[in-house]
Length: 240
Image 1 (cartoon, one colour):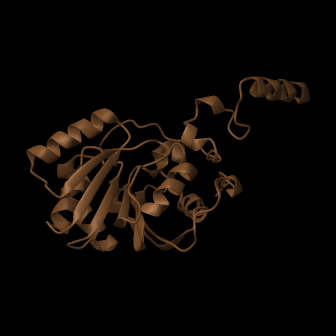
Image 2: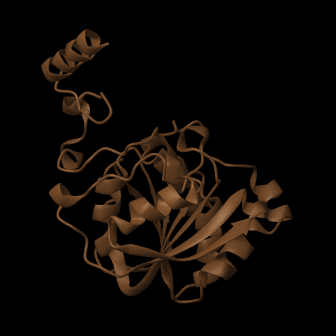
């Protein structure tokens, strides 16, 4: 075992691997390399939808989550990992003509399809944006709520991603996460792990409630501290 470990370490050095995960550091996006990798699996993106819109509406999913999140007319909201736009269009209806919704996704083909839907359905208060795995590319000081619905477990670079996301929130804004309580490799995020990763960026979990009709739980976060220097971030252990 010691010889095998030494050989693995030498190969990792030759390949410029990240010592935490064994991944190739050179393959990471330039904007993520100053940040630690997540000490956990990252779920692959297997679909642009969690369930059909009809099935989700039958259990009143979006209305329930928006009510819990306090989404109101006139608000500015970001829908991160918007996919086909289930929440995007319902948020647009809720915030009304005085509000704004920015729909973000990291897949160009998804953004193109969503743009067509927004144009076809005439949602004039919605804009779309192509983000990156390490940076949602949101404008600073712009949002009352930032929603991440059934997508947190797919964030490949959570520390870089949250670090870049933080300035987009207004001082009294909130980040809302809906996910399943299961390991990240199984398309969920354990709440303790989520709270730990968010806390590393200066966010405090203010509420955690079960939401079985939304496939898991609802978590509310507020920013209570400035984001740290990237080099000072200590990744949360998988056991969290």
